[in-house]
Image (tube, rainbow, N blue to C red; front, side, top):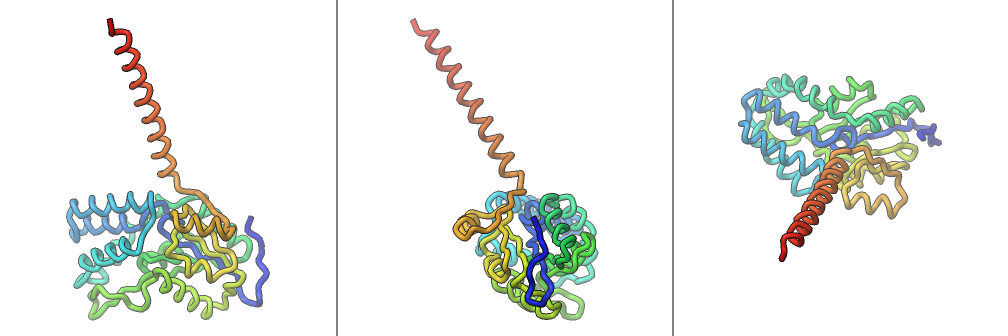
Length: 261
């Protein structure tokens, strides 16, 4: 239950990671679809992104995977018009909204009802963080900012990349600017990579945690929310399939036994 936190004079807030936390899977797959529709990538490249999204949804991210995705995205967007990419946002937003995890969104609204500020904190782009936070009625968003020169994307970051310590740095900057008391605040994430942000606040919460974060949350007694259904559905299918195969094997064995002289 979300309660009004004791504050040292600042404003309590809740910071929500986006991918695998507020949204099932990766928002990147919707950028990939929009990029394919805009002619920036091929259908084959889109299928590659979709496969990576499935692995991310089931296992979470790693530093190597994140760097690979950044390099691939930079290759696609370098030299493109910033306006061109902004025009892709509505299509991306439609996909992201369809993947919102209702249980986590309800927690965010409980924070608002308790008088807390609510923010998205994501390694996805600042434009998506801003638009999604507006649509959901949140107080703002922190996202990756891309360098633009003469209206064209350079493929480089504009400021710290909002991942690991870079995300924590942006949260600290926002807290200082808005008078937020991090010692009375919450942070929600699925990934061990967000430990710098989770350790900034009084109430860290693991959502659909990857294996590394699950171990840390268990050791430190953090709250854990399980909202991702895909892994459980696949586990259920695997169990049913295994039982069916076992039944078929047993039937075949009985048939062979009856056929022996």
